[in-house]
Image (cartoon, rainbow, N blue to C red; front, side):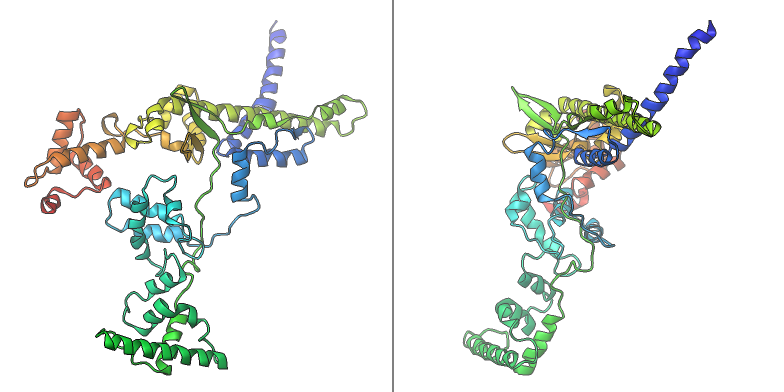
Length: 459
């Protein structure tokens, strides 16, 4: 009797090991990938496995994918050197004493730097789709331009060179860059044309010197050809591409896996692309395998099992992403409508894992590096992890605690501002938020709020 029962058990267990376990390994490999990378991976597998086939009617469907492909083609992979420009700038930004929001805006602006170190795009382009207004971003441009390397964050070559000469505002080199930059290109070298151009430039400078004297200006312009040549050489030693010696990382172009749309006042989530429907088993190859004419049958059977496990993993990958997305979107309905960070409901990853029946590690792989398109009149792509807000003190988010502190400080006496200890007591009494004085100081600093003795002097 024992042998009769054990035979099916062994057969089932072996089947689980050969099909389910390889599928799990494939699933672990797929989970961190966005659907574009998953499609590429499946397409590569299809080249070497005749049992995996792509449905040509469903390939490259969806304008969102095509649009992003046009922006950043698959073949474009910039090679970054070390250290990267962004890392170099982040180190300097972290040392600045700035309010949290201003620091975040400054970090955001660094993503718009070109490989040469310029802010090439129009200012309105920076602001579109960002949490900051146009004026807030323009206000941090001087901060960016104050960082090293000198000239970083310029909007033009002229501005880049002037930033490098900002400590010499009365020098001839500064004046030449400011007023005669286009003419300098013809003044370099030892050719006859270059000498004639320098003489013509000298004549203009002497005329300007006479004009300044008539207007009682204090900038002297008593120049000759030698001083002009020296100033031109000084300008030639400036760096027209301040990011030249750094690696460059582009502003990330991301591909959302999920999209949330509002229907009848309720946000609902779906997959941007049904990857599972694009790939299937090749039935013709399976029919060939069952024929007696097939050679190397053992190798083909192994390929078939690999194809089956891969498609099982693909289906599970898609279902897991959708489950996590559905839970987060359902929980963050208010935030998706208001886009106010204070409306975010604390949702740590372990809570997501318990709710959808997945492990913490699986949820972490799904959330990390994945994006969701919030689609309405002002579509915006945001990290899926932004909806997984960790729980802080008293079940509040970091932003909510900072907001409560700002509210209390706005109500305080101008001549007797609250100390951190008093703020801790008020948070407990008025909002039921048990918090230590040191924790108050931490969140006060994050909110960019000065300590009591400094606020006393601010009024």
